[in-house]
Amino acid sequence: MTDDVVRTPSEWKDVGNDARRRILTYSPAMMVCEVEFGPNGVGPLHHHVHVQSVYVKSGKFEFDIGGEMHVVAAGDALVIPSNVPHSCRMLEQGTLIDTFTPAREDFLPA
Figure (cartoon, rainbow, N blue to C red):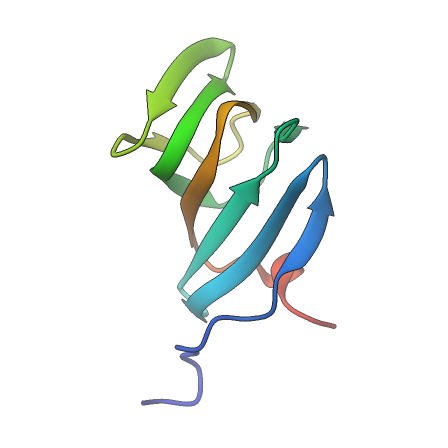
């Protein structure tokens, strides 16, 4: 294993809006995170330079990606292009697996 690859999940971090996140693994080129949503969980509208893929591990979610609505459930996946505004709203409590390329340096501890 090289020094720039982490294989051990980080501690859970409360990210607000009834959601928490932990980093499962990352390298400078890519990061994989697990995001759990509580009963009122939302991912507010935002955008970033990273390409993001989302895999729905469990639950059901409504995503707004560039103004287009997508409802996804366990086993579904989608890709969010770089700099496209997006948000998600939990419809049935669940967990997402998010992959970002390159890694989200803003998610790393200071």
